[in-house]
Amino acid sequence: MAGVNVKTFTAGNWQSDVLSSSQLVLADFWAAWCGPCRMIAPVVEELADEYAGKVTIGKLNVDEQGEIAEKYGVMSIPTLLLIKNGEIVDKIVGFRGKPDLVKAIEAKM
Image (cartoon, rainbow, N blue to C red; front, side, top):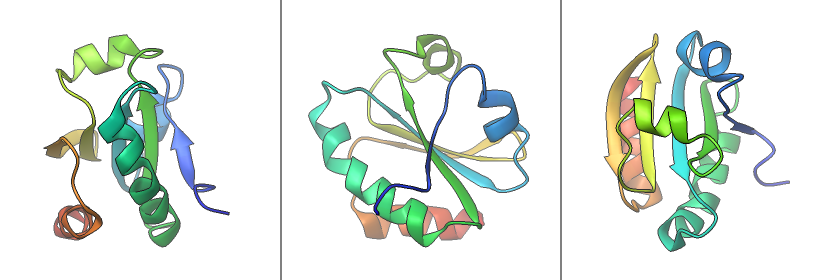
């Protein structure tokens, strides 16, 4: 089943699941009304399945978790942050294809 490895990030688990994670984290900032976000969602799900156990991949709904989006300066969605040891190591804004995302993940692992 696609997407079973995609976490849902919230203010309640951001510290433990993202900032304190021992793995590289890809956080997809999205909203239900965002067309490009819906386009990238299946790619994010594929990556979560392919990198299960190696990279933590999750989604953060900016409409529901606006304070986190604001804290990280997310002005456009989709925005994907790669976070390692609590620090942003890469920021991808806008739709990107799977090869671009794989390249970004591999470069930061």
